[in-house]
Length: 247
Image (cartoon, rainbow, N blue to C red):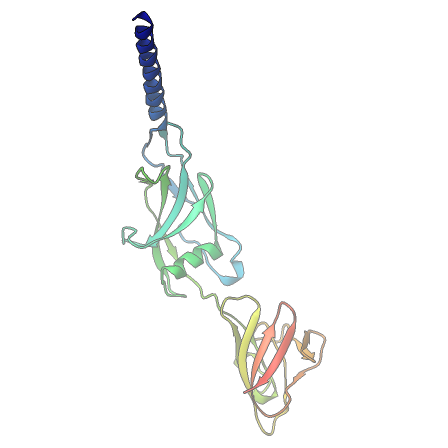
């Protein structure tokens, strides 16, 4: 009887220990977040342009969101939305700490994803989301308003030639929709003019590329088309090559 009683006592003690351990683990697993810190921006009028895409457009700074209970790691995300829309539709940029430098290119990418018109000044709302778990509601900072003008990602080179009077300013443009250095366009060579032309990065003669046998060079002579007619001109400024395909 005594042995049986001892077994009951031991089992009960073990159950209490397990229960206490579970309660302890449960307590450790609970976390709560306080109010989000105040968000500030280094500028409210960041200048955006294709030529400065790798530069910093704006730096956002905020104080850390306090966490009580279990010290869960916080994930911060910068959210961007059209002004006055209460973030119904937004773009996000991940942040590694309580400060985030956003490049011109990344900010412009977010603006284009929100369907803003390029070349047109507009206003956006920015806030920071703090989160620690999918099961715990995130908290948000105050909203900062920026005035921005998104730009098109398309870039151009120009093809002045005898067919149009050797004028870079009015020459046909070859376009690169993503500014990756690869350009396409068409040129029509006409009767009574030579088949010669060049490629210029800008609508001026400051820098120009001639070429032969599909290779471009600033020291080469004029590029010569095979014959009169319309050609698809493909230019790779990364590899300094070109092709002419009769249409």
